[in-house]
Length: 199
Image (tube, rainbow, N blue to C red):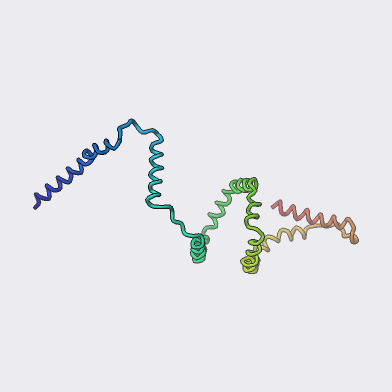
């Protein structure tokens, strides 16, 4: 039995080795020729043919419809609130260093966007209806909580301007319509502007 198995194995190996030689006359009769080195374009054209034939075999890429993808985005993103919180809790220093390092990129991107008219295109694409819809739904829901959460930031932001106003020595007020009253307003405006741009 062992001898029969060995003989069968040897016959199988011999047939596999002889296969290309036995098929050569058939290939040559079908018009195959031996040529020199292939041209540099040959690998590219072969790759294109392979890709085309692959698409023919497997078909086009199957893409889900937009509604299904949008719903999946909403469901998965809504469920990821804890992941978001956990991810940003320790990311403050990374954000700050990355944002500082990207200042030049930000400036270049803003200039590029302005040159391309991206701001105006974005407004036109969004439109008045979307603005109103978002402002009256999401905006109205978030306005109150946003104000409550920003009390400390508001105090920090307004304090320097209050100090500037308190330190001003305005000229005396004149009767209604007196040009000196306009001078008082100009003094206040100039001081507040200097505070803003001088920070």
